[in-house]
Length: 161
Image: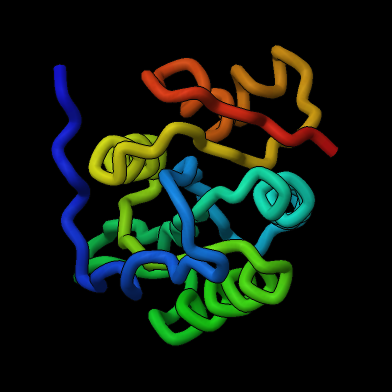
């Protein structure tokens, strides 16, 4: 069943700027949240993507919970955008073509949002940070990165601590 693109309040900040010009480039989707595991994935992309000449599409998923009275976000739109801009600036400083966007997703739809963006962008690769959890820990607590890896039709790289 094809995934529909996640509804978006904010468009992509534009296509990645190609610092060197040239031919086709590998598209990488980097879901980023500013967490320690997301920083590991960002470090990996800074080291790997710059040498491979890839374009990185940085996705910040702004999580909300639904309760009586409406939606309750974990951070403001401004905080989410500032976090993703810091990561994008770091990528651009390393010479990596980068664009970023913030998408809103209910807590139980994070994986769906990531996969829908990968399909919409036709990304060749998804790179995610992953915690070192036991199988029992994954069953009890869940794992966004594990669920993306299991459900994705794209190549997925999990960067472990």
